[in-house]
Image (cartoon, rainbow, N blue to C red; front, side, top):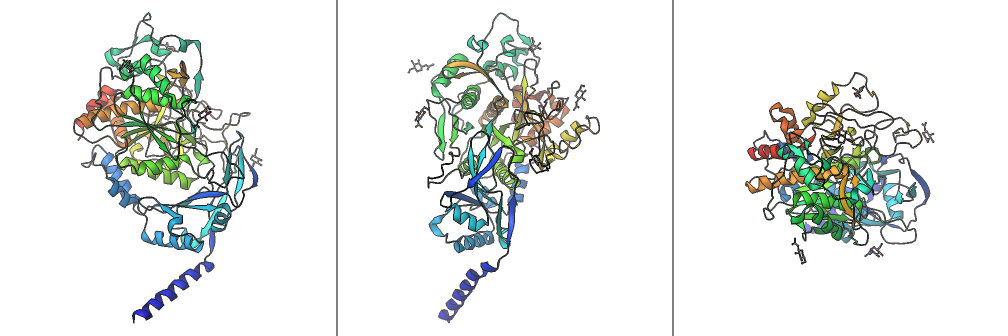
Length: 603
Ligand SMILES: *[C@@H]1O[C@H](CO)[C@@H](O)[C@H](O)[C@H]1NC(C)=O
Ligand SMILES: *[C@@H]1O[C@H](CO)[C@@H](O)[C@H](O)[C@H]1NC(C)=O
Ligand SMILES: *[C@@H]1O[C@H](CO)[C@@H](O)[C@H](O)[C@H]1NC(C)=O
Ligand SMILES: *[C@@H]1O[C@H](CO)[C@@H](O)[C@H](O)[C@H]1NC(C)=O
Ligand SMILES: *[C@@H]1O[C@H](CO)[C@@H](O)[C@H](O)[C@H]1NC(C)=O
């Protein structure tokens, strides 16, 4: 009997293995090559790529439900974040998906040690030559060159056997052409920066919501850590070093944070922090070359860690895509660095509770399947209790690649239609997008990225705020240029220009929503300090809290509403900052003192 049943199993196995030849192959995804890229040669067949295969996270809707509950201040589960094990169980794929993908890989000679899996098995990675990838995906890889000279090996379309379509969400590198970049709009090496950071002669500027009701006059032209603490009502608040609270920022694109510049900055603006530093975590071989300071990395580390000192600080440096070299057989330009970081942080047991990122790309250059999956990764981090802030972009309503000749923003779908261009990841509804202000009293800075996502629909937390703003527009305003049903960007704002940093040993002034994200994150980390010291959970995903504060007239002092300025782009004046939420500055800038009382009153 036993022999007989074994024979049947073998026969069935043989039958299963033979069957795939009859599977119909269907296109899984097709994209238009984004503007700026030119197709060059065919990719060498023996070039190695790391294919990442995303299996559907079958219980993601349940994870999302947990996320809403633990992030909603009116829910009894507020703050009850999920453990690593609980999260991994919820994002695990269905066993059938695992089996079918394994069989498909086996048909192409890939098994056992050829296959790497994420802890939840929702990502599978195989290292294959381009020739094999082309067979597996019925695709044709080419070398594409960007107008900046960057090169990538990509295909504009790939296919999968029809029976696998429900079991594979996406495979990359295939159709992903995005080039994440730093959100730094302005960099001035000007005379003003060479002067001291304070000016004792001019009278202080009256700002009723500020600490003591005033802000130093110099803050109108030069932003320091002291200016931000005055303006956002946090003077005198000292966090603890050992509460368990941590803060971090991310670095990409060979942006390195210089340690000597950090000390000069601390000596200039945060004397108590002199001799302190951050922990460096390298992902995928990311460097922190001290001979090559990066303005973005210096800005992020100096201001974020200057605001939060002495909270333990981390700088994540993730290696980017190396340039494509046709004759080298090592794996090349296969990874999207963003995914590498997400992969790493999702599998870190106790990640920093507050993380700022100032890198993004035009939403339309990111395949929707990729945006969706990365956004689910951010939701997963939120469920674990991590607050994520992203700069909203530096091109107003038309961030990215406005045609230099016409100042218009073209869609990338072959229609050549002008449309506002939101940025991703800030367009993901599971992160907090931070827009920019300038001057004291504050007004919207004209480059503040804002608008509405074309990929993600309006999340429930925006159900009142966004229609409230849309009702202030003259009917027909910008009809066809934006998606009024999309997730509105940004959620909040902070100062974003004239930041005095140290770079290559000298002070310079720098700006961009790149400055706003670490600033907002800095005050979030101080709020986490207050909560953790009070024995409470960290804040985690912030938006449900931000929007319920924004909707409550009795709590209006929590944000300094910015009601002047606008964010031009795509040949238009953009949107206006208004009373309440708007797609230029969100609900406005933080008032730490008021927010602290609110978050300490929450369970
Ligand atoms: C700050 O600078 C802006 C722009 O120069 C100016 O309009 C504003 O009056 C200044 N604020 C004060 C209080 O002087
Ligand atoms: C920083 O370290 C140097 C060298 O060890 C020391 O001389 C200096 O007093 C330290 N400064 C502070 C503020 O701790
Ligand atoms: C660091 O940067 C310098 C200057 O660009 C370069 O010469 C050196 O090779 C780099 N070091 C490493 C380890 O990459
Ligand atoms: C879109 O614009 C590109 C570049 O200007 C041009 O080559 C193409 O023909 C246009 N397509 C359509 C559908 O108008
Ligand atoms: C912005 O405000 C100006 C001045 O009130 C107004 O003319 C313009 O129509 C407004 N723009 C939008 C998009 O609402």
